[in-house]
Length: 107
Image (tube, rainbow, N blue to C red; front, side):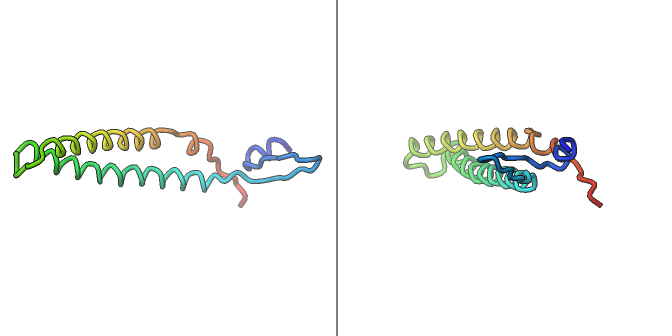
């Protein structure tokens, strides 16, 4: 019985002498992970565009009246870009949820 429960992804929770059987939400975890990856990619794109525009302003000196603010914006957007790219790679390379998925063979 224990091996059947492990294969089907069922967990037993015992409260006050009663057993409550609840399935693990594997599909919800994978969809949540995909949404987090998409969120990190979209933030990376936004920070990349800001970094590209402010970097071009600093490099070509195109009408910069407040170079301090522009350089501050460039470095903060570069830091945000690096943060979200690294977070996306960490989420993509973590195989905790993906490796535990087994076919249930219920057919």
